[in-house]
Length: 248
Ligand SMILES: O=C(CO)COP(=O)(O)O
Image (cartoon, rainbow, N blue to C red):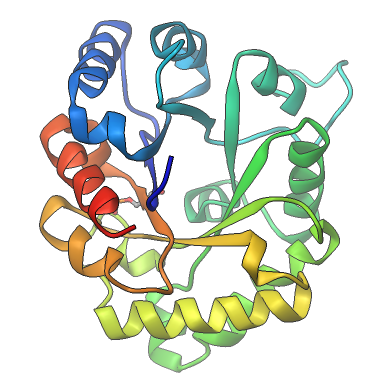
């Protein structure tokens, strides 16, 4: 499978009936089948999605993982081993919504990253600055601080998703220049803290839609996209996958 990686983050959306319709439509979409694609449903629906996706090219991703890597008395938690057991290949870690609403910070995220790789999952580590940080001009330092957590993961397969908070769900996509600038910066920073930017893929996320995907994927510095809202719409997601496949 070649091409850019497209991951659909469903966030806290979905129901059994709607998921069935969406996944069956994705399976029937030639562009989705031909691209390198993953979907990240909520925990409650991972089993359903895994069963529906069995034998398909579409991989399964989770939206989060517990920092605890041993089974036990951790009510409400879902471990990396459980995610691997139900068929997940990827797991999102450090999404800005988790940083914002659940106060996830450096130490916890470092543990989650370790737990993910220990379970054989590929972490999709999310970074991104707020509008205030962008306007204050501190955004690169913010991203560098967030990336520092990856230092301990040297040697592991890892995906980084750059998602400027101000572009998430706002329809306000970062400009091509802003994306390229940050992706170049992230690659260089990864070389410093992770040691091998070559083995790391950097995805862009934030209001990616069918009509802007091709221009974003045309950037050499972009290895794919983490898609929120548009991943719930087959037509939009299918066209994003088509754009990803075009720009190998
Ligand atoms: O947060 C995102 C993906 O993780 C991006 O969400 P939107 O594509 O809805 O802006």
